[in-house]
Length: 301
Length: 287
Image 1 (cartoon, rainbow over the protein chains, first blue to last red):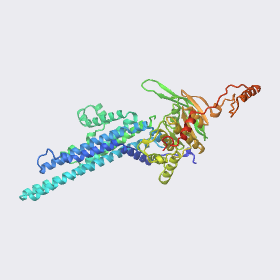
Image 2 (cartoon, rainbow over the protein chains, first blue to last red):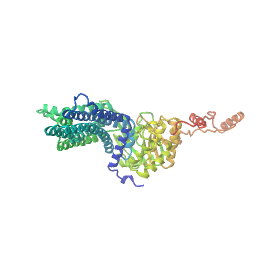
Image 3 (cartoon, chains in turn green, yellow):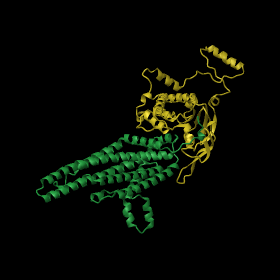
């Protein structure tokens, strides 16, 4: 046997991955997430039925309104259910590890604390990725199902047009509906929702590195979630106050991730904006995970 | 080389909010020799678990230091040689027995055929082969302790730290675990176990140390500590009543004194295990 004094256990991405996969498996097998996701899927798929009510007779403008409603409703549902999964899923990770004593069995193996923490976070991020992708696919299906109906009707309008002018109008409307159904901005909005959720999970993990109560973790994470949406207006209000500005910089500005409203209003979302906001989120996540590591590395278990 | 060595290991916990500090361990000098089974005994709160956690670098000493096979405990590399079973573990209850061992095996660098082989070996060793595909949420307390022992052994460490390995387990499960500890000793492993179940420790430990309020108050070889060198006992079969008087007279004539004469008693544990063994329907929930 080799002499342990001359051996070295370095940082291992493989161990991080193992812990992440284990965290994901554990979460997926807990029925609570499946039920949450299932509920979200049912709600999202029902959006196309809700939209049949209250919009009057079918026509070009009504079609666009209905598609807007589906987008608004589905992006909202993905954001809210994603937030629940991100906060509840992450808040329980470390308290559960302590309660089940599994943290002792892992950290008493040749595993570094930073690997454990990164693995737990990555597992949580994977759970959110899976949830967001599933909900997005359902959203896409609902949008396409409804959109195809409207496209079919719009095509009929074109073919039934009595004169050239009417045909041109109907054609323009058809193109607008097509653009609304196959809208690349939907993908951009979903990417930003995911980055926002990943940031929220990182903040929840940070809170759980110094607290042992899951309820406390959830409460603080929810508080930061709501505060994060108010940072933008607050910064405007206290523009002159440098102290307030400093405190507000510490809270992530979550409103920048919400592009649904712009999208509904028909404002284009440039890729550059998406890249900038995603970068802002990523830098924030790296800082929050680094802070979590400093606290966790110093915590007695 | 000692498997474990501690020098003046001291731990004070901050109680927080100005409530002062609690002295959990007070200048412990412990040496566990390679190949022995060492029992750390003491009442609740005497510092047993703290000692194990200090050795595993889960908490940090206020002063003093500890080594595993001469490697300082604060080095991650020291944990290549040690396996740990915590007190009352529950593990990941949504994983099956086999998945649990595969997860820990992967963490320790095993993969592919080697991992599968090790998993099967360990399930066999702890007698859980038939329960390999059952989720841990359906395991009994004794089975959880056994899967816990298996995960502690996954990287084939030379040293095992077991925190209250038989606490809360029924007598059959407890006997199984003690038999396992003896098998592990036979395989050349060193074992440090903490317990407050004294009679159980007596069967498996070579040496014991007794902790109270963070201080070691007694230490030594179990056989020497429990045997009374001043007294001698005979166990005699089929001695008629008249013979008894003759024996007593002989003892007195030789200068000794008969202190007590009684029928030897079996232990309640032996009686219990025998009764279950004779029950044709089997015993307990094993597998």
